[in-house]
Image 1: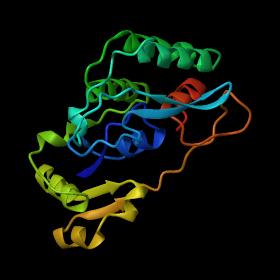
Image 2: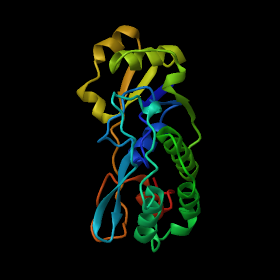
Image 3: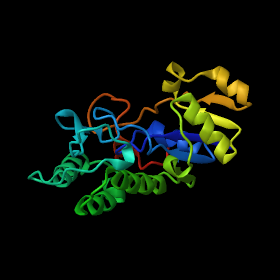
Image 4: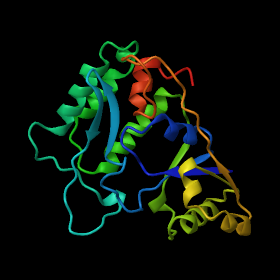
Amino acid sequence: MIAAGHQPNYLPWLGFFDKMRRSDLFIIEDNIQFERQGFTSRNRVMTADGIRWLSVPIEHANKPLLIKEVKIANKSKPRWEHKHWSTLKHSYCKAPYWNDFSDFFEETYEQEWDRLIDLNMYLIRGIMEFLNINKTLILGSSLGVEGKKTELIIAQCKQIGADIQLAGDGGKNYIDKTLFEREGIELVFQEFTQPIYPQTTVGFVPNLSVVDYLFCTGGKSW
């Protein structure tokens, strides 16, 4: 069994879904610490004026929070959902595949979301369908194991019976390979190559949210 995992990012980039597609079971790491400047609550899209961040406002807390504990700040006016939907609409309404996917995102942003994990999981599952990815997702918090970085990953692999761990390329900077060897678990790195495709502006900007890829390509060419 090939296991992989990642934090439940907001409107993730295509590499997130590539790792999911190549795994047998994908762990949503909801029980690790939330990073305010990370991609769990924000991502980048292309607009007529260049790259723009879409950021979900987060309620302030006086202590570090796990991702599953993070609540969305819904008191701002105009509402953040309206801003995000408006940005997507103005940025991609003339893209070739806008009509194929726009209803899902409009419906998403018409709802009121309390927890960040619920919003992100709803988006992730919807995008999985668009990309024809049918994989088992499991929340890390449901596995009942603890640890940090390499120790946590190995504990999760052992809990689900995985003998191969597919790690993102960023894991090369912190994963202890010797611990995997000791436990008899094969460690493989993703080595994802960003496909180049026509975007709504001249030139190509890599590593945007997957919505850019969907609206521009239809999600069928990767």
